[in-house]
Image (cartoon, rainbow over all chains, first blue to last red; front, side, top):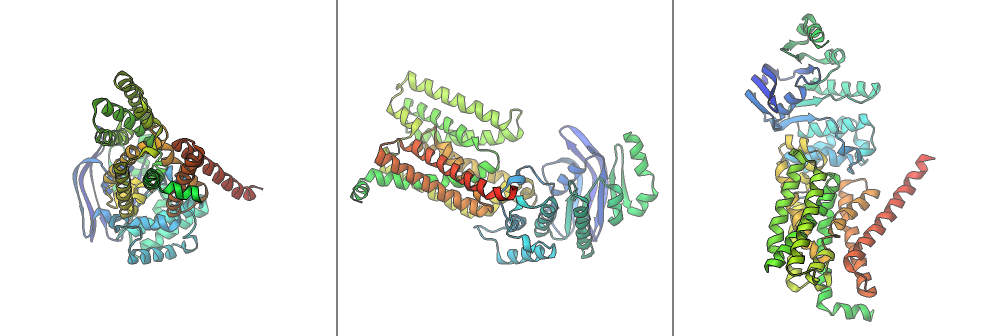
Length: 232
Length: 275
């Protein structure tokens, strides 16, 4: 089943087109990795998928869910480095879009959050302060928050950026498991080789054109080397 | 004891305590958001705008609240908006607006009514001169703000922690930013009567900063900031009533004392980890 269909998308940053006439679809159960150099429009595409104030022409359709139900793992922000909040407060804020009035979240929200915390191995940390966790632990907490907001699709923005090798492997393994359990994964990355190990599909934004296809097709194509030459 | 009982027989003391506790509480809750959003100076900027507009209102013979509240709300919107989209950065914009408003206020006051007691009470506060209607306004504003704060607690947390994420899951971030601006503006205008334009911003930032020295959870930061703010207010008032010290300044100094004490606690707690 096609979950997201993007047709003839041209997105603008200030007055310049970041990319033009982009076409791709996301099927249920895909593990799509979005590649591209800095400035190729990965972030613009991500903000567009989330509906965060991007000017564009073209058409996007979501099948069976709304874009509010995309679970987004953004990159960590400067503010969060010294923000006083414990892990459960951060995770529960994943429900803030469908939240209730008042201080306490709904009972089913709290139950679901507890289940996700357990699934990601974070139950022991739930009363710890977010700012005191390691980078890898913080990413898992933010992934957990994304799950609370998500229905069937996760959108991960360079999830392993800034993590040490063991934490990177752990996070990749967790993402792989979520994918196996039926979650559709969209992941922005610039680690081509590593990302290709798990991905089923590739969207590579180049300078002039783009590649969209399965990871086998991508490996066989010369798109990767071609964009490298253009860049050099 | 008799001295205290005697104090409570004066209605102006009761008015000051009721209004003051309410405003101290609101200011500290809003302060948690402003400090975490790197907007601590907003309160300071708005207080100067409040002073400027109050001086103009006095010169024109209009009730200051009627002019100050809309003007300060407008200024809050502008400052929060400019800092995101404009060419002048947020802190610079606040500095510009703040000193200009103060300058205009002083000029208007000097040319018309003169720098009289009314003007000075807006600069340094005159909490013991609060009338019955001042108190009714302060208490209803405080109750309104507390109610809105509790109702929208989840959304306010989400927008403060991660504005983009909140927007992506469907929280109307712009709306909550505006709500915060309006609430801060109203608190500053009403609080100016008690604390004075020059000191009001301290009761917005101090309790939040003090609470963050020792608290690790968001909810405990909010609650602790509220308690610290009310305690500092009451101790400051006691200095003012028993030792004839100026009320607004005493409250600020007590807040400073609490901040230093809690910073020391934080330092001592951390030290064993270093050795």
